Length: 327
Image 1 (cartoon, rainbow, N blue to C red):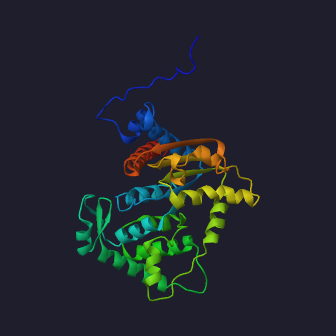
Image 2: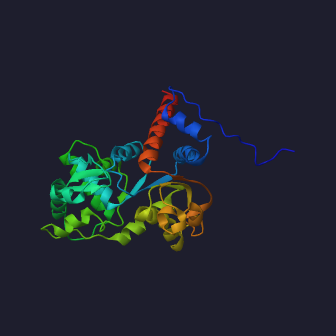
């Protein structure tokens, strides 16, 4: 009698110099541990695109200073995500780089008092000029000061206009400029917890007012109108919860929703601390945030490792799809 638990052998990874990123992740899906999970994340993301699911993308952590900005731009420009929810920090750093300023490789082992004396800010092993950050603050403050102040803005409206302004000031495509051009909505539910809010608070003009509740309504509308939805989380925090709650909000309003049908998360956090960043999709199913029977996977990995691999594999896959289309 065959053993149902011993039906699918692990396939040893065969090194091959000719492999493309897509091939590597396909082979990793036949191994184990986080390698298999990363391969499965690739499969699920492809399935979302093939099924034309509406894809929410949550971006937490210091991904832009770590060099992930153009990865997100690629996802936006190639219709691999349909709505971006981000921390304010990532969007501030995106503005900073779009304006031509840089983050620099540094070290996590350094005298931080000496950095302070040289007006250098540290993000783990990455450095930035505090004086240049202040210049970005002024750009955002001046931009906001030129907006009509007769009504509150959703964060989507504010960030769309900021993306348009950045496009006028720079030829460098960043997250906000690419999103504005592709008409992908961008939300920042914790905008007050960021340098964007600091810039607005210390600027000389009357700061823009935000209607965060309208953000909640709009994102619930996006979830309710979609035939199916998928979620991809880089890290956790506020972006993850904000996207998760779209299904709950829509359900409480009486919309016919059943939870997100596809789910991928890249996290370095563990569930046993009780925080949302490490919480499993199974736990989210108890809230109705993720549907019963959803295709889901968690990749426990540094996002600066997993995300470029996933995006590169998706680029290979898109190229193959394009080549197969009849001319």
